[in-house]
Image (cartoon, rainbow, N blue to C red; front, top):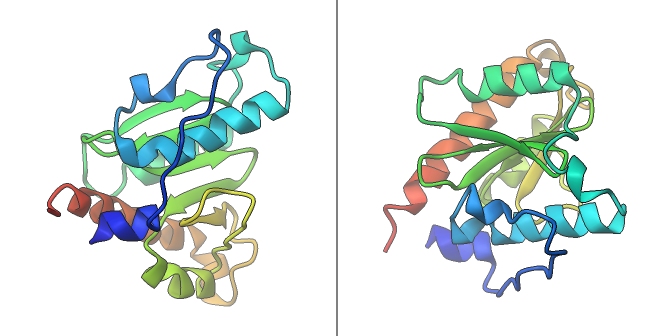
Length: 174
């Protein structure tokens, strides 16, 4: 059931890549990642960024440090992390990416549609220019109201853990 929710009953065709560009599926082989990876490759190509920068370009070092800290803060040791196409990725042991970071403050978390309203109320944002079901949170609490603006780390951590558990649950679905 969750697979149908995440896929939204559509087929995602792989993006044709320049043969010099690496395929992220080599590092995180999970069919549920195809839509995200197609987006990353397409975005890289549209910016006409050089192939040799695929692994060098990354989010701000402080964001990487925060992202790695948060994605490892809920007691799971087998989270896989890598930086590719200017994004820092975190994936389950089944290679399903459940969160990614970019720029100076943006952290994206894969959430089921039924959780979007609550995540948006907590300060998340959906943007049609990104792949579906990825809710953006900003480090520092921007867009978070009241207590959430002070406790922004715990808000992001909560949603990362929910996403991780939902993604792990996908492997248990028929």
